[in-house]
Length: 359
Image (cartoon, rainbow, N blue to C red):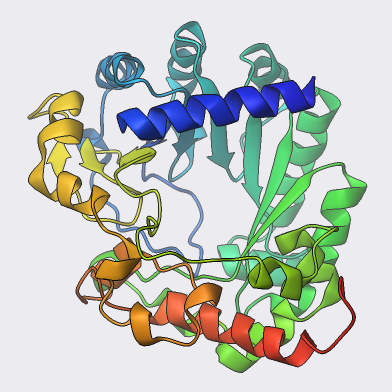
């Protein structure tokens, strides 16, 4: 059954790519948040400027017409919106597969049960460490780890899939393996991300917490971490020896398979790229199909990148066009975040490639 579903999704994805219709959308319901995470890259504006429930519902209808199947609701903290249940129920009525990102602090037994009834496909909860003094230092709120883990237990008890979302930073890197073990013990998925995003409009500098090349390589070289990132049946060397980057390959899915709508109605080809329109001013389909920059982004291939053709770390790299723009660079230029990760993976590869296959 799982194999059949996987094949069906591959068929749907292939058809969507051919038609250049987005399969997924991320909707930021609010930027209100009761935490003050040290690595947060979002700025905040008055809540009365955010999309109303009616505007979100209209957006859902436009997304359905565009062909979107999967939604991710994020914030801020989405449960600070009193209409969250109405919005999720409307998404369910429109047959979207919905996932939410939350701190979990507002989830009680009733809400956990309701999320199961609404067929939410997964709840992502940020867990930075299993030690309160580390996790709470990141969030800026004492007791935040306890509340998040309580939500995890309630959700699992109600049959809701839970995903630990764990950015890897200088603040928590040595404790990440403990997070991985806890996630497994609670039958949750664990998503690790060592790429720390620069702040919007320089409101703060999350990059000060990013691992440098040497620390990244040390982290990625751990056997327990490699398994989480690349799977239990793949050695790091096998992954990159099999990778073959062709000049006509797409760089990423930007402007092709997904789009992002922020809490103020701004539409972007991904969550990091600058807005290319607003649903309060234009129809979503018009932005998606007719915006000149959106069209240009879809045409970018590996051969267009300014430095990739002569870079020895190309096959280890997944360039992020949006990250380059966020750093004030040309969209086709290398950015420090992607480049640092590629260099670290290359270091690990060079160190391990002499070992037997699978190690």
